[in-house]
Image (cartoon, rainbow, N blue to C red; front, side, top):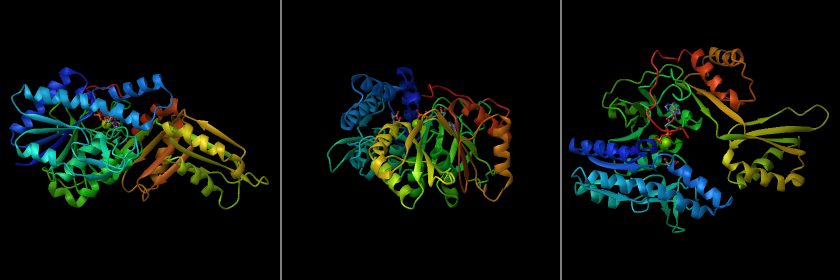
Length: 428
Ligand code: ADP
Ligand code: ASP
Ligand code: MG
């Protein structure tokens, strides 16, 4: 008898019907002879709605109360799912993050896992019950407060429980049939990927493909947990994220990993661009600027420094960061303007980032040419560029992002004959 962790995202439990459908699936898994631990997200767009509600009450909600509010979404789903399972004659027990032993640090809104001690979950399943755990929440032992782990964090709850309970697999159920070569909402001709290495999936997730929370992929790789991303609306085999190429044996089908060079195109609309204009071009200024940004707890992504304009001894530094962190970072920089000695700050939140991901890109010079040619043929202007061993990213205007994604996807011959199915969700 193997232990399976299943995570159901918001679109899978968006209404009573969805909850009943998921209950059926969970009970069937148990009847097939597995021990089942289920992680649930909040129903549909509940988390966004709760955040909107908070914003109507105040523009500056205390982080502790915001976390308290958001954890309520997952509590609703877990209790309803437990009830639905009971109606099938099976026994389910729901647990909040803290009851399930998800111990985090005390940083509200982006807490990181410190320890996972799911003894109550273990006791429940050892009794033959189904355990249901609220996603993306935990508790800090230092502050004794309830925390949340950041948007999309239920995937990470699921993988962390799978590791702590030594599960055979972590199944992530969502509203598409698996991981595609691009977001099927933007590229309907995107193709489903059967297997992807965790390295490539890490780059996809870090580049904005929200199908998996970045930290869940990192966690799965660290603990050797195979992730199976699939739809809760169909029975199709989804995509396996292999923790490492050497771990293929764990995968039931066990076929050797055989990847094309390019695995996919990811896009991201959640970042803004800050330009610090007229920075004195002397050693130490970049360190000062990024020290200020670090102090504001912002996660910087792409950084570009221009060569200094001749004769002025000054340069411009641009970088991208999550829009939600923009205001705090700008305020911190403004406070330090005189000390750093820059001329002015520009902020642009109407940008989009596009990334091409694939193993072996560095060693294939034709890749960059095809990439930039596709963008130029589509009339897409490029603002910033960055590259890694297995990724090229560019920043473009937000309104041209979809066009750019489709153009690059096509140029790399990733388009398939079939139209990808999107079963639900609003894509919010
Ligand atoms: P859930 O609520 O189940 O966690 P998410 O909305 O977080 O679901 O993630 C699923 C969505 O991710 C899909 O509906 C799709 O629009 C988007 N997505 C982005 N990139 C990809 C990709 N490469 N493959 C599949 N889906 C993707
Ligand atoms: N409900 C949370 C969110 O919408 C966590 C999750 O679904 O993973 O971000
Ligand atoms: Mg998600």
